[in-house]
Length: 320
Image (cartoon, rainbow, N blue to C red; front, side, top):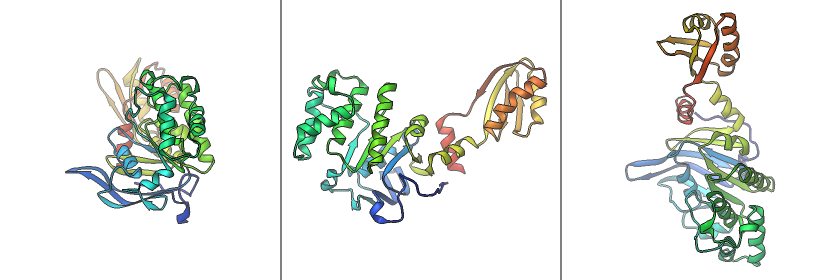
């Protein structure tokens, strides 16, 4: 299913001039393997998160947007042009790949400076200094990148990608390996870019990262667009779905009898070790459980949600 919301920052308006990215029924396959299946969306300035489990097709979408892969079907436009075999596009596009793409024998300064020179910037040294400052690598810029931590390598890749101040920045799992401080700093920098009119698209399989940064979200599952729109609406769909809890208490049988009468519960199963409860309202059940247990004079020992993996959430969205 797709969630349609009112246009906000990050979702393109109906004016073609505002559309940084346009995909119309785009698919990409490798032999008999379908990586992206009939996806359509439009994006404008702002921050958009591609959210999905590993292997969902997020990297394939980013590689098509950056011109490294040709769509097998459909139409894909970036800044009003085809991305495939269009090197001029890179004047306005930056890509941060997921894979480690630094040369270990170069220092951070040399790596970013070379990127600035490849872009033909008028003052590559000034651009490199500015980019390294943005990602807080000034103190480590003269060290070889081979000695960088994973988080530092991520940041130097970001610096090289934005050294020419692109209108569109594409990032594939950009927060991998970053410590909490580095993650917050990168997020603030990306928000600032979006506020200045840039389009930022990043992929992640971590819900918290998308929630903290993205104004809008595209949920990708098994190569399909499962949901799209405002993050809060997507989050509501993820929460307001059937949930299963495993519970251990001082008297599971008595608690099961009491829970059957609660409006948020639609299923109860009892075995030798656990009481399994199915609820249609996550929030209402978590509030009611303690009250029901207290009224039944039952002590709760363990309460475990058993279906909270991202894969189960995404599968539910696809089935809607």
